[in-house]
Image (tube, rainbow, N blue to C red):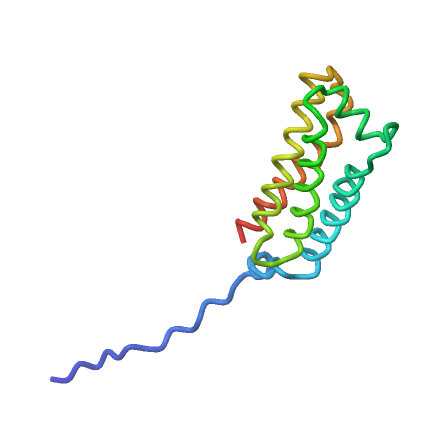
Length: 140
Protein backbone atom coordinates (compact mmCIF):
# COMPACT_ATOMS: atom_id res chain seq x y z
CA UNK A 1 0.00 0.00 0.00
CA UNK A 2 1.34 3.37 -0.93
CA UNK A 3 0.77 6.53 0.98
CA UNK A 4 -1.31 8.75 -1.28
CA UNK A 5 -1.08 11.82 0.90
CA UNK A 6 1.40 14.24 -0.51
CA UNK A 7 2.64 17.48 0.96
CA UNK A 8 1.12 20.31 -1.05
CA UNK A 9 3.14 23.53 -1.24
CA UNK A 10 1.68 26.25 0.93
CA UNK A 11 1.31 29.72 -0.57
CA UNK A 12 3.33 32.45 1.11
CA UNK A 13 1.14 34.54 3.37
CA UNK A 14 0.56 37.97 1.91
CA UNK A 15 1.26 40.82 4.31
CA UNK A 16 -1.59 43.14 5.02
CA UNK A 17 -1.34 46.58 3.48
CA UNK A 18 -1.10 48.33 6.86
CA UNK A 19 1.65 46.06 8.13
CA UNK A 20 3.65 46.40 4.93
CA UNK A 21 3.55 50.19 5.03
CA UNK A 22 4.68 50.20 8.67
CA UNK A 23 7.65 48.00 7.88
CA UNK A 24 8.84 50.44 5.23
CA UNK A 25 8.90 53.52 7.50
CA UNK A 26 12.63 53.50 8.31
CA UNK A 27 14.59 55.50 5.77
CA UNK A 28 11.40 56.36 3.90
CA UNK A 29 10.47 59.87 2.80
CA UNK A 30 8.33 60.55 5.91
CA UNK A 31 11.14 59.28 8.15
CA UNK A 32 13.72 61.51 6.46
CA UNK A 33 11.34 64.47 6.55
CA UNK A 34 10.82 64.18 10.31
CA UNK A 35 14.55 63.70 10.86
CA UNK A 36 15.36 66.77 8.74
CA UNK A 37 12.85 68.89 10.67
CA UNK A 38 14.31 67.74 14.01
CA UNK A 39 17.80 68.51 12.70
CA UNK A 40 16.87 72.02 11.58
CA UNK A 41 15.08 72.85 14.84
CA UNK A 42 17.95 71.77 17.04
CA UNK A 43 20.65 73.21 14.81
CA UNK A 44 18.86 76.54 15.18
CA UNK A 45 18.52 76.29 18.96
CA UNK A 46 21.93 74.68 19.48
CA UNK A 47 23.97 77.16 17.46
CA UNK A 48 22.11 80.13 18.94
CA UNK A 49 23.49 79.20 22.36
CA UNK A 50 27.04 80.02 21.21
CA UNK A 51 26.40 83.78 20.83
CA UNK A 52 28.50 85.68 23.36
CA UNK A 53 26.58 88.98 23.38
CA UNK A 54 25.81 89.88 26.99
CA UNK A 55 22.21 90.70 26.04
CA UNK A 56 21.62 87.55 23.98
CA UNK A 57 18.54 85.60 25.04
CA UNK A 58 20.39 82.43 26.01
CA UNK A 59 23.14 84.26 27.90
CA UNK A 60 20.52 86.05 30.01
CA UNK A 61 18.48 82.86 30.50
CA UNK A 62 21.43 80.78 31.71
CA UNK A 63 22.54 83.66 33.95
CA UNK A 64 19.08 83.58 35.56
CA UNK A 65 19.31 79.81 35.99
CA UNK A 66 22.45 80.41 38.01
CA UNK A 67 24.39 77.28 37.08
CA UNK A 68 26.96 79.11 34.97
CA UNK A 69 27.56 79.68 31.29
CA UNK A 70 29.27 76.30 30.90
CA UNK A 71 25.78 74.76 30.90
CA UNK A 72 24.83 76.96 27.94
CA UNK A 73 27.83 75.71 25.96
CA UNK A 74 27.19 72.10 26.94
CA UNK A 75 23.53 72.37 25.97
CA UNK A 76 24.39 73.99 22.65
CA UNK A 77 26.99 71.33 21.89
CA UNK A 78 24.62 68.46 22.76
CA UNK A 79 21.83 69.94 20.64
CA UNK A 80 24.11 70.59 17.67
CA UNK A 81 25.81 67.18 17.73
CA UNK A 82 22.48 65.44 18.36
CA UNK A 83 20.93 67.27 15.41
CA UNK A 84 23.63 65.97 13.06
CA UNK A 85 23.41 62.47 14.54
CA UNK A 86 19.68 62.34 13.75
CA UNK A 87 20.57 62.64 10.07
CA UNK A 88 22.96 59.67 10.06
CA UNK A 89 21.01 56.42 9.72
CA UNK A 90 23.12 54.45 12.18
CA UNK A 91 23.02 57.09 14.93
CA UNK A 92 19.40 58.29 14.84
CA UNK A 93 18.48 56.77 18.20
CA UNK A 94 21.62 58.10 19.91
CA UNK A 95 21.00 61.59 18.52
CA UNK A 96 17.37 61.49 19.62
CA UNK A 97 18.41 60.35 23.09
CA UNK A 98 20.88 63.24 23.41
CA UNK A 99 18.30 65.79 22.32
CA UNK A 100 15.58 64.27 24.51
CA UNK A 101 17.83 64.52 27.58
CA UNK A 102 18.43 68.21 26.82
CA UNK A 103 14.72 68.95 26.29
CA UNK A 104 13.77 67.08 29.46
CA UNK A 105 16.40 69.07 31.35
CA UNK A 106 15.04 72.31 29.87
CA UNK A 107 11.55 71.34 31.00
CA UNK A 108 12.67 70.55 34.54
CA UNK A 109 14.73 73.76 34.82
CA UNK A 110 11.88 75.89 33.48
CA UNK A 111 9.41 74.47 35.97
CA UNK A 112 11.55 73.98 39.07
CA UNK A 113 14.21 76.71 38.98
CA UNK A 114 12.58 79.37 36.84
CA UNK A 115 8.99 78.73 38.04
CA UNK A 116 7.83 79.24 34.46
CA UNK A 117 5.41 76.42 33.63
CA UNK A 118 4.24 78.06 30.35
CA UNK A 119 7.88 78.38 29.30
CA UNK A 120 8.27 74.61 29.69
CA UNK A 121 5.59 73.87 27.10
CA UNK A 122 7.81 74.02 23.99
CA UNK A 123 10.62 71.80 25.30
CA UNK A 124 8.07 69.37 26.76
CA UNK A 125 6.14 69.23 23.47
CA UNK A 126 9.37 68.58 21.56
CA UNK A 127 10.29 65.91 24.09
CA UNK A 128 6.93 64.14 23.68
CA UNK A 129 7.10 64.36 19.88
CA UNK A 130 10.57 62.84 19.81
CA UNK A 131 9.51 60.03 22.14
CA UNK A 132 6.62 59.23 19.80
CA UNK A 133 8.98 59.28 16.79
CA UNK A 134 11.54 57.11 18.58
CA UNK A 135 8.93 54.57 19.69
CA UNK A 136 7.50 54.39 16.17
CA UNK A 137 10.95 53.78 14.71
CA UNK A 138 11.66 51.03 17.27
CA UNK A 139 8.30 49.35 16.63
CA UNK A 140 8.83 48.89 12.91
